[in-house]
Length: 470
Image (cartoon, rainbow, N blue to C red):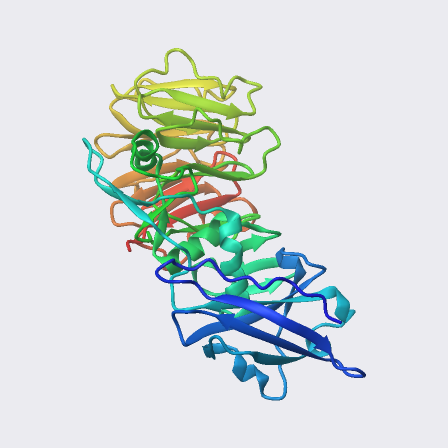
């Protein structure tokens, strides 16, 4: 006899009474590998519903417990799909052995039903505009991982072409999320949420949007980082190349990127996001990293600039490179070298601190009217208001010597022993030593329209962003 699992219904929008799927019996035919599963979907509002089915091992609910029900025989596959009769007893005959090779008694069956409602029940609350904050419409409660499980089950059972279930992991297939981990266990990753939000025309909320929702009395059940608003924001695309890195990732509303030796920081509309190695706490973004306007990543340390002109640091600090000096006030930009750091002040002057054997943290007199700074392994560069670039510190590969073609510069970056700049036409110029095979200074052919570039002082890869609009 097949063990029974109480049939569950996906969490659909509450515009009418949701369908309720009920398994009446599940019996193995003696001497065969066939299982007869009798079920019905009760729905007082609809004559037909859409249904699908999944198996689960040992009563589990994680993705590693799923058994796909693919082989339905004797014409019973017609009892699943878009026009399944409601309030009628139906039968599925499953050739279990064709889809699964373990004991029948260890698998349970779940019928999922949908009556054309949206993927989640939403109750929207619109906060009025206040000061510089525009009006914003937010769901009355956050969406947690448990809420998302039925949606994943539905998509997996329907063999959605945009995802693949392999070894207990849900992976993206094709498009912007190809090979990205979307979900595993019973949890959904940020990439997975982005995929679902795009399908449901939702978006995560920024701290600025959540603040009035938390403080006002608008009828929210609760508000936190898992709250969502209307209108999906197409994620900006992140490209990377160089040693140990060749990938494309997506995050919504990217404002800045910063790359360390083995870690990356991203500043988006939702704050600072970090991934990679965390040996010295370099990706453990502190709670004080709020209202951040800029980020920087050194060898194993990280910096963030807040809107009030103060900077904070975390991670490896043996040379005090993550300890902000008292002179770093009214800061408008920051940079992190291998073991040194820089801060640009509002008056166009630069402050340097940390490891300084090549004078990479000793600011030259020519560094005036500076508008941007970058710190490499043992060298530093600065962009001045007149569009010229200067360099100082270690120069054994010419990384601090600015080429004559460095014109119309709008942004700069510095790597291990190389430097980069972004021109106002969206093209990139790189020079110095590009590591094994010269990867870091071999700008991919055809790359244009770049809006942001990032390379760490000790990074083995380059990250650039082509910002995409919805």
